[in-house]
Length: 375
Image (tube, rainbow, N blue to C red; front, top):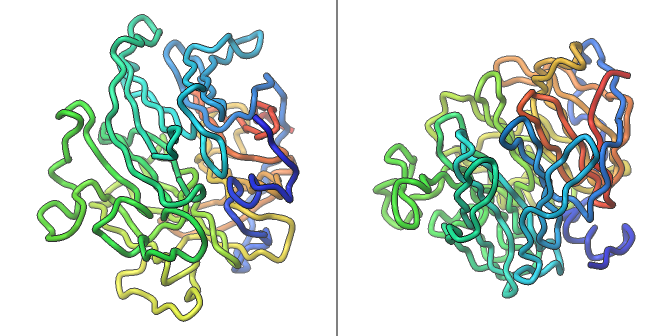
């Protein structure tokens, strides 16, 4: 797989177009600033995603289609290799991985040779994948090679959440963000164990709504490249990549019944996009930053719930693909009360991974897998 420099298609694509000014949009007071360090624990081949695995392990996805397990000696040999089935042009590749809460099933999100977003499932026995059990859960055709989304996570409710971008190009030319008749530009919620190939959770917000896809949990998203649930509260946080001017982080409380409209393509952050009109039900981001600085694409992370950096406890850690600086939000009752620079740079940060112990890892698309620790 060939990766070019920041002027390359990856930055125009995987970095999801933007130049991000990492000054906060509002002059929020800063919390007591934690400072962190990064310890490189492994080198991967273009890591794109990671997840907590059985037995306290951390599993790392590589863009071309391999999955490896992180151990004391670095990364294992591949435990899964679908590189013959993926394409890595544009923003494509193996983009997301997740286990269910019992580590009984493993899910992968990738773009196949035709560029179709695909979610597959494997049964797991004794911490190992069972290739003979592989099945396809969900597919979505993609009109362009960018804005595929691709992240996966199980929520506290036990359902599988799937992020899909608006289909690509620029400016949402097909109006997918606000169209409830397509899965593109949405966060989905399905029950993969409840049906063949999956069931719709009965509490999904658009079940029974004429013309709406019942899989949809939230909409109005441009490219929700990374999202996560707070291990402590169950709150949902989404890093949604902007178009030309604003990067945003969206939030929903654990008690949400879904149906949030985050505004794209009428809104970019808190601002009308071109001649857009703010939807009446627009849920504004809890944080945005403009593109006057070095960044280009927000990389959503996790609320820190580890023990290594006590001053960071409960703060949301995120970064930017082009800037690489690790930052944190202090959030109280759904409002950002502080923004801080953590004093470390992760390179071309494409994702974070959270271990079962709550500790965080930073993935640099160039290969570095680093653990966050005290400064």
